Every structure is written in structure tokens, then in C-alpha cells.
Length: 443
Image (cartoon, rainbow, N blue to C red; front, side, top):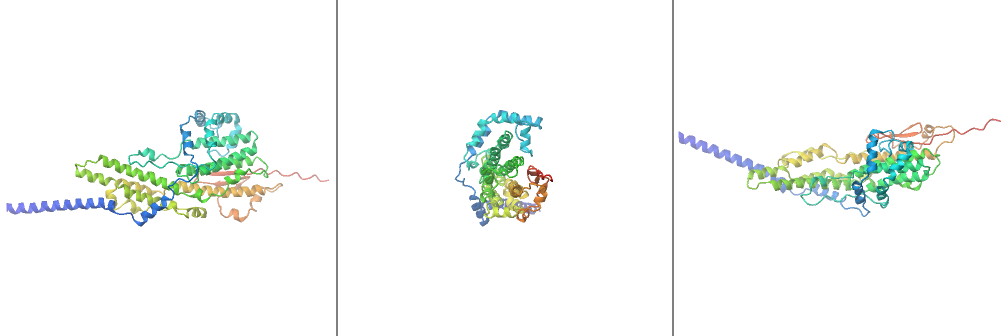
């Protein structure tokens, strides 16, 4: 009887060992299978599309000059920023979020002049850039041990303060009576930002460049509203208000850089896990291998961004609201995640949000702002010189200028565009005040 019990126990033990061995082999297979799987046709197509945005265009690169602004000491500008937080009523430089930069500078032109005088050296860096210079960030380091902080560094910290200085300079020129030069300066600021971001691979510069262009054009309209309606606009304004080209709407360079640093981050994590792995403990090797599969995660990241390189993206943006496709939920769950815990967590974040949505929204807003500018230009060209009001003129606007837009409205002599996706909820373009012509006295 004892012999039978021993035989039964032995069989149970063998069965358990076989079961555990099978489970272990299944786990190893689940971990290794994605690593051995070749790239699919969709993976190859996504990589090929993103490769179109990787090479830097053959234009002057403003990266070194603008990054150099970060290292320069702007003591007066920083002091002005601190003073703005305590005395917002009379800052020396234009506040980017303020609707009426011109009125702000007019309240204290001496302080604005002193602040700009202290910034002659930093601003000279910007003025010395070629007219078509763009901001192209160097690619992430190729070394697998590159720090994540370096890979994730995007944009430059002084973009906002630089914009404040440029707007203040144009507004001060107008306050000092140099009207034509001031209009040209404001339009040149808008055109400068458009050039810096056109084709740029930096997501921050790409989005903020459009926002800053719109701010500069709004300042131009504030100046023009204080002049007769028939005052001609200088040549730089035509270029600043020209429709965005396909290159100006393209997103492929930004997407390519985002994919590059996110994928490199995954390979960095895998490299770190490999170096910490204790190869004399098979269990530790398996657990480490389950942490991340950088190659398959990189493929998922490429699929999440490949839509940004579609050649018809500019046309689809001009046609109306564009909904960026998202990764399917299955990309971040399933058996493949058993050997890719960190990678699936990263892909899950991409499933939950639409990558580059802020850049798409800025394009949509700027296209609406440009359409509003076309209305503003038509109204200026048809300014009444007698009793009719601006709403009377607006009512006779060609249908081709009014159909694409349902958000602008005329509030007195101000054309208002609601921009809920922008930093400013309203974009206001003032028109010259209508003065009623004096009728001749009856004889």
C-alpha cells in the first residue's frame, strides 16, 4: 500500500513538473514570439512614410542662434517678466496674452524703450538670421545610452520672451510716429515665425510659430485701425498674410522627430534592463526580458504617427476639421504585452490620446484666422466715407468670403473670431472708426 502511494505521488510530481515546464515554455514562447516576428507590410509602410520627414531641408538652420538665446543673460527682460506679475497694468514689454499690445506700449513708451535698449544684443541675433532660416533641431543621439532628458528636450525657453520683445519694438515704432515702418515690422515678425516653423521638426516651434504669427498680424491690424482705411499696407504684409503652403501645413518632420526620440527612449530602457540583468539567474533573465521589447514598441509608435506623413494632409486640413486617427486598442493589450510591459504602457498612452493634436488644432485655428484676415482686408478696401456703418458694409461682403466661416462676427468696428482652441479665446481685428462726412450747409 505504501508502495502504491509512493508511485502515485511520483506521478503527481512528474505531472506538476511537466505542467510547470510547459507553462514556462509557453511563457518563453510568448516573450520571444514578438521579437522573432518580422516587420509587417503596415510596419514597413509606416517607416517609409516617416522617413520622408527625417532629412533636414536645404535651408539655413536657426537652431544654434535661437538656442544661444537661452544661454544669454537677459537680466532686464527677466526683471520685466517678474515685474509683470506684480504690476500687470503697466508692463514694459507687451504681454503675449494681451489683446491690445499697442495700447499697452502707449501707456508707458519710455519703459518699453528702455527694455528694448537692454535687449539690443540678443535681438541682433534674430535680425541677423537669413529671411528663410528655419528651426531644425539636431536628431536625437544615436547612442543607446543617451540620457532621456536630452532626447526629450524640445523647443527653446525664450520663445515667449523673444516674441514679447519683437511685438514691443513694432508697437513702439508706431507710438513714436513711424507708422509705415511699424506696420512693416509687425508683418515681418509674422513672416519670420512662419519661416522658422515651416518644415521645422520641433513640435513646440511648429505650434507656437503659428500662434506668434497671428499675434503679430493682430498687432498690425491694431495699428492700421488708427490710420485712414485707405492707408496702403507695406509689402511684408502681403507675404505675412499669404495662404499657408503645403510645406507650412505639413506635419511629417514633427512626426518623424517625435517617433525618433520616443523610440530611442524605448531602446534606452531596454539597454538599461540588459545591463542590470543577472545572467546567472535564469528567472531574472526571463523577468528582465518581459520588461520591454523596444523593437516592436518602436513599430507601434511609428504606426501611431505615420498618418502625419500622408501627402494629402494639407488638402484635408484646408477642407475642414481633420480627425487624426488613433492606434487601435489592441495595440496595447493582448498576449504580445506579456513580454513588453513597459512598451505596452507607452502604447496605451498613444491609444488614449491623438498624437500631435495640438499641432493640428493650431493649423485649424490659423487657417480660420487667415480667412478672417481676408474679410478684414475686404472691409478696409470698401470702407464707407459717409453714414453707413461697418455692419452695413459687412452685409454686402461677397459670399465667397463668408461661406467658409461661421465663427467671425462684427462687433461695432471690430471683427471678432472665436478661437476656443487657442490661448486667446477671441481674436480681434479692429477696423478704422467711421467718421460721418460733413454735408454741405443748405443755401
